[in-house]
Length: 168
Image (cartoon, helix red, strand yellow):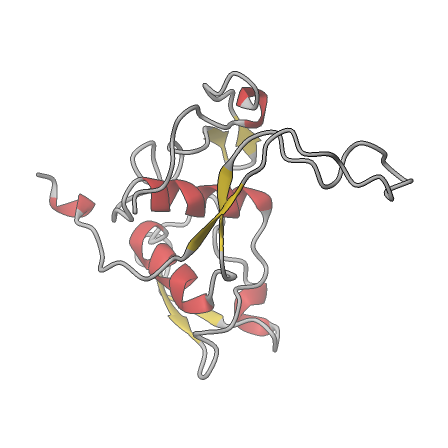
Protein backbone atom coordinates (compact mmCIF):
# COMPACT_ATOMS: atom_id res chain seq x y z
CA UNK A 1 0.00 0.00 0.00
CA UNK A 2 1.30 3.42 -0.94
CA UNK A 3 1.68 5.59 2.15
CA UNK A 4 0.53 8.74 0.33
CA UNK A 5 -2.96 7.23 -0.05
CA UNK A 6 -3.77 6.84 3.64
CA UNK A 7 -7.26 8.05 4.42
CA UNK A 8 -7.84 10.81 6.94
CA UNK A 9 -10.38 10.45 9.74
CA UNK A 10 -13.86 10.90 8.28
CA UNK A 11 -16.17 13.74 9.11
CA UNK A 12 -19.91 13.39 9.18
CA UNK A 13 -21.48 14.21 5.81
CA UNK A 14 -25.22 13.74 6.19
CA UNK A 15 -26.96 13.02 2.89
CA UNK A 16 -30.63 13.19 1.91
CA UNK A 17 -32.31 11.40 -0.99
CA UNK A 18 -34.01 13.44 -3.70
CA UNK A 19 -36.44 11.36 -5.66
CA UNK A 20 -39.89 10.97 -7.09
CA UNK A 21 -38.74 10.62 -10.71
CA UNK A 22 -41.15 11.81 -13.36
CA UNK A 23 -43.00 14.13 -10.98
CA UNK A 24 -44.53 17.20 -12.58
CA UNK A 25 -42.56 20.43 -13.02
CA UNK A 26 -43.59 23.66 -11.32
CA UNK A 27 -46.43 25.08 -13.47
CA UNK A 28 -45.94 28.53 -11.92
CA UNK A 29 -42.53 28.98 -13.52
CA UNK A 30 -43.18 31.25 -16.51
CA UNK A 31 -39.58 32.28 -17.27
CA UNK A 32 -38.29 28.79 -18.08
CA UNK A 33 -41.33 26.52 -18.36
CA UNK A 34 -40.92 22.78 -17.80
CA UNK A 35 -37.53 23.13 -16.08
CA UNK A 36 -38.03 23.57 -12.32
CA UNK A 37 -39.50 21.19 -9.81
CA UNK A 38 -39.37 17.96 -11.75
CA UNK A 39 -36.90 15.21 -10.85
CA UNK A 40 -35.77 12.92 -13.64
CA UNK A 41 -33.89 10.44 -11.45
CA UNK A 42 -33.13 9.70 -7.79
CA UNK A 43 -29.96 11.17 -6.26
CA UNK A 44 -28.52 12.28 -2.91
CA UNK A 45 -27.63 15.77 -1.77
CA UNK A 46 -25.84 17.03 1.33
CA UNK A 47 -28.16 17.85 4.20
CA UNK A 48 -25.93 20.76 5.26
CA UNK A 49 -23.58 23.09 3.48
CA UNK A 50 -19.91 22.06 3.35
CA UNK A 51 -18.08 23.78 6.20
CA UNK A 52 -14.69 25.47 6.23
CA UNK A 53 -13.43 22.67 8.52
CA UNK A 54 -14.52 19.99 6.02
CA UNK A 55 -13.00 21.88 3.10
CA UNK A 56 -9.75 22.33 5.07
CA UNK A 57 -9.56 18.54 5.49
CA UNK A 58 -9.99 18.23 1.73
CA UNK A 59 -7.34 20.85 0.98
CA UNK A 60 -4.82 19.37 3.40
CA UNK A 61 -5.40 15.93 1.85
CA UNK A 62 -4.96 16.84 -1.84
CA UNK A 63 -3.79 20.43 -2.34
CA UNK A 64 -0.20 20.58 -1.09
CA UNK A 65 0.63 21.74 -4.62
CA UNK A 66 -2.88 22.98 -5.51
CA UNK A 67 -2.46 22.66 -9.27
CA UNK A 68 -6.19 23.28 -9.97
CA UNK A 69 -6.58 26.21 -7.56
CA UNK A 70 -8.91 24.53 -5.06
CA UNK A 71 -7.95 27.33 -2.68
CA UNK A 72 -8.92 30.87 -3.64
CA UNK A 73 -6.81 33.66 -2.09
CA UNK A 74 -10.16 35.34 -1.33
CA UNK A 75 -10.73 32.61 1.31
CA UNK A 76 -8.04 34.18 3.44
CA UNK A 77 -8.82 37.83 2.74
CA UNK A 78 -12.59 38.28 2.77
CA UNK A 79 -14.25 38.68 6.16
CA UNK A 80 -16.98 36.11 5.45
CA UNK A 81 -14.45 33.53 4.25
CA UNK A 82 -12.80 31.20 6.71
CA UNK A 83 -9.63 29.48 5.44
CA UNK A 84 -5.99 30.54 5.40
CA UNK A 85 -3.06 29.02 3.51
CA UNK A 86 0.61 28.97 4.47
CA UNK A 87 3.69 27.54 2.77
CA UNK A 88 4.62 27.36 -0.88
CA UNK A 89 3.62 25.13 -3.82
CA UNK A 90 4.28 21.52 -2.89
CA UNK A 91 4.02 22.20 0.84
CA UNK A 92 0.87 24.27 1.26
CA UNK A 93 -1.04 23.84 4.55
CA UNK A 94 -4.55 25.07 5.27
CA UNK A 95 -6.34 26.09 8.46
CA UNK A 96 -9.75 27.45 9.43
CA UNK A 97 -9.85 31.03 10.65
CA UNK A 98 -10.80 31.49 14.30
CA UNK A 99 -14.50 30.73 14.90
CA UNK A 100 -15.07 29.95 11.20
CA UNK A 101 -14.71 26.14 11.14
CA UNK A 102 -18.45 25.38 11.27
CA UNK A 103 -19.48 28.11 8.85
CA UNK A 104 -20.13 27.32 5.16
CA UNK A 105 -17.12 27.46 2.86
CA UNK A 106 -17.09 30.39 0.40
CA UNK A 107 -15.28 31.09 -2.87
CA UNK A 108 -15.61 27.56 -4.23
CA UNK A 109 -16.45 27.17 -7.92
CA UNK A 110 -18.28 24.37 -9.75
CA UNK A 111 -15.07 22.49 -10.57
CA UNK A 112 -13.88 22.69 -6.93
CA UNK A 113 -17.24 21.23 -5.86
CA UNK A 114 -16.94 18.35 -8.36
CA UNK A 115 -13.44 17.60 -7.09
CA UNK A 116 -14.70 17.64 -3.48
CA UNK A 117 -17.43 15.15 -4.51
CA UNK A 118 -14.87 12.92 -6.23
CA UNK A 119 -12.66 13.05 -3.14
CA UNK A 120 -15.59 11.93 -0.98
CA UNK A 121 -16.47 9.24 -3.52
CA UNK A 122 -12.88 7.94 -3.49
CA UNK A 123 -12.84 7.57 0.31
CA UNK A 124 -11.08 10.86 1.22
CA UNK A 125 -7.58 9.80 0.14
CA UNK A 126 -4.37 11.78 0.63
CA UNK A 127 -2.11 12.61 -2.27
CA UNK A 128 -1.64 14.71 -5.36
CA UNK A 129 -4.63 15.58 -7.48
CA UNK A 130 -5.02 12.71 -9.93
CA UNK A 131 -7.56 10.10 -11.05
CA UNK A 132 -7.49 8.40 -7.63
CA UNK A 133 -8.13 11.55 -5.58
CA UNK A 134 -10.01 14.36 -7.34
CA UNK A 135 -10.13 13.91 -11.12
CA UNK A 136 -12.26 10.76 -11.39
CA UNK A 137 -15.07 9.31 -9.30
CA UNK A 138 -18.66 10.50 -9.46
CA UNK A 139 -17.50 12.95 -12.17
CA UNK A 140 -14.81 12.89 -14.86
CA UNK A 141 -12.51 15.92 -15.02
CA UNK A 142 -9.82 16.24 -17.68
CA UNK A 143 -8.31 19.63 -16.88
CA UNK A 144 -8.43 22.45 -14.34
CA UNK A 145 -11.75 23.69 -15.72
CA UNK A 146 -12.67 20.92 -18.18
CA UNK A 147 -15.32 18.28 -17.63
CA UNK A 148 -14.75 15.07 -19.59
CA UNK A 149 -17.47 12.78 -20.85
CA UNK A 150 -18.70 10.48 -18.09
CA UNK A 151 -20.24 7.03 -18.39
CA UNK A 152 -23.79 7.94 -17.34
CA UNK A 153 -26.02 7.36 -20.40
CA UNK A 154 -28.18 10.42 -19.66
CA UNK A 155 -25.78 12.89 -17.97
CA UNK A 156 -22.41 11.71 -19.31
CA UNK A 157 -21.88 14.90 -21.30
CA UNK A 158 -21.82 16.71 -17.93
CA UNK A 159 -19.04 14.45 -16.66
CA UNK A 160 -21.35 12.29 -14.53
CA UNK A 161 -20.41 8.64 -14.24
CA UNK A 162 -23.03 5.90 -14.11
CA UNK A 163 -23.87 3.97 -10.98
CA UNK A 164 -21.49 5.71 -8.60
CA UNK A 165 -22.24 7.12 -5.20
CA UNK A 166 -20.18 8.25 -2.26
CA UNK A 167 -19.30 5.57 0.29
CA UNK A 168 -21.46 5.58 3.43
